[in-house]
Length: 170
Image (cartoon, rainbow, N blue to C red):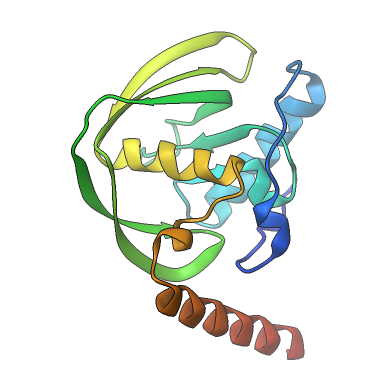
């Protein structure tokens, strides 16, 4: 396994739209293992392939306290199951250190392939529903900061660019 670099906003590669996975191969399974190691090392609960500069429709999530609840979503299709949005605080490994309240459907159904290429359907609610939607947005080249005002988004971008400049000087 290998820890991968997580792209940070405003990196333009985060805006690329991911392509459908045609077949779950050994390379795809290795990517999932590498993404898993990367997500756990970053203390995250979700990670999309586009965040590690792989333009494939794959994301993972794990809400367990002991890293035993990994779920893999390949070519996910998400259907909201409620009309009224709920407000949740969202953060992102690609926007480190920032959390904002956003409205999203509280319940969704996901149809996807698992790590072995088997089709599954599952319903999620609450924070897991938010994570599924958040990670799926990455596959479409969208970030949670896109839902913020331009002023907030620009402040976050400037702060992250400053942090990135300081990190490269060290």
